[in-house]
Image 1 (cartoon, rainbow over the protein chains, first blue to last red):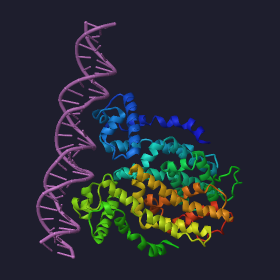
Image 2: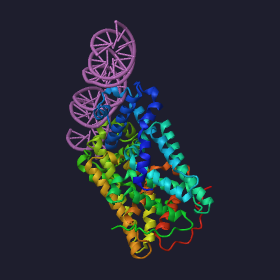
Image 3: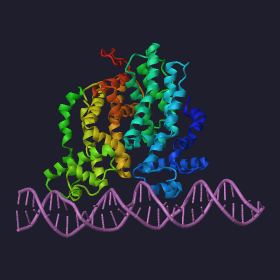
Image 4: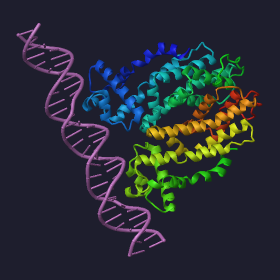
Length: 239
Length: 239
DNA sequence: GAAAACCGAGCGAACGCTCGATTTAATCTT
DNA sequence: AAGATTAAATCGAGCGTTCGCTCGGTTTTC
């Protein structure tokens, strides 16, 4: 699987997440008609991500958001109860579907190595397709209140668990070396996050998301596999 | 070298960086006596890092800073010309000495492998000793103006260059495999940054900074070395 | 007794948010 | 089909508060 293939299959699944936001935040939303809510929530989310990525969520004023969305101040507050509530909605929204897609990507009948490759690529390709959202979630997560911060941490550990489980299964099958799989996973996640956090660097290095995936996987495999794979024919060397 | 040894040698070198800040920002500072400036700048920097890490720099008000430092609003503004100027001072300060210490840690007579190990540990141990500063610099860097952002990017590329050079030299000597050393470096940096960005996770995993260093190095060596080292006697396996 | 350092009330501007007025859409009546 | 009625959605000036920052006055230092 490469990014182009992934996009065709999965992007549609991720688009209609403002509909989820409607059902999950019904009580905070004063507008009745679902169609209207979905349409305007998407505008609000997109605008918030745009401005938020440019100058940070806290520096974004509701007047900025009003201008960007074309909605008045009053209209905006029909879709969320406060600025913080908007932030929480944005953080929650998409997190569940992210976890879900990651878990669905695991194939029970496939080998641990195949699953390792699939999960890493899925994570990477999702962040590529929704870079502003991932960047925003990472950077603004620290400004959440205690409760929401705890929820975010638990979600991250849950997501880490997918990889840990695959590594453990691989060890059990005698394919992967016995190692600290939680730590391996943490390091893998760090590099996966870097793809959307340090976009400018990889653009400068002329590295595509497919290049990145293959390179990262070759590192992980060199470390984890007991039986090293035959050398890849494509060269990794820079120009 | 482990963290305890590092701390004894290098921490003193990093403490007096508010003195540098004085000489570099003389024109923006109204207070004359160097001793007074150094003392109060350190209080201001420490307080800014503390509050900034708690609630973000933008959410920190000058009244917050006044309370935390024990200085009045008027006194504060004798040490910087604006809130943004304070941010810029903090970002610049320490960056040069960081680069300098990293470069000094490279030993021309040592092997590339030794230098790789030293540089990675030095980076890691510095971020451990000054975690609030590193966290602040990473998280608030995006809120800088265009010029300062460009300076930050150039510094990062400069710092990456140290590792790239070591990897290239290792390849030349036939110790390291021919690979995309810039990309390898980017991935290494991503994991190094994760150490101070996701502190809670490594605390939960009960991983010390020394553990982290050794584990990361074993991954890098598995990927880079042509002649694999004999298996480490200490087990990486989790409990 | 200057000079240096510090103080903190107060300025205009911008903030998050509200609410009565207004416009738009949906439903009912004939 | 057209007008009347009601409900839904939007509007934006204005509220109270807080923001970054200043400056005339006070305290500290030498």
